[in-house]
Length: 95
Image 1 (cartoon, rainbow, N blue to C red):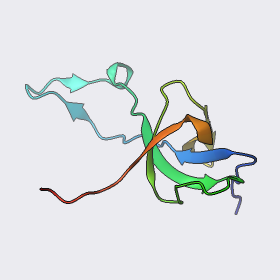
Image 2: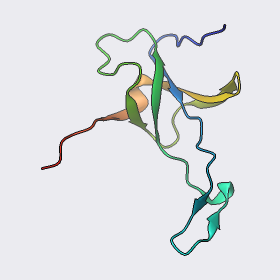
Image 3: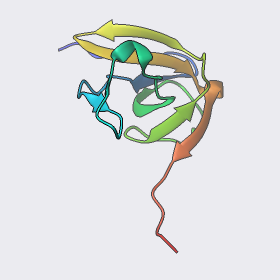
């Protein structure tokens, strides 16, 4: 089995898209070409970063034009510099 390991201060994100059909409230099917890509993804691996503030499995929000997308073993990934991560998405309790 092969594994991707980020080098330097890079973070590997899983950006595999949900292939389910999306529709508007009125029932119109939204084609893939019209969908806006989300700017958040799951952290798969972390490079050599001191005190990163994230762990594998976290969902992070990244800059719009950040990183390099590629396919590896039939999944889509994105390699993003740690500096291009904007926020970690966390669950909180409702008030």
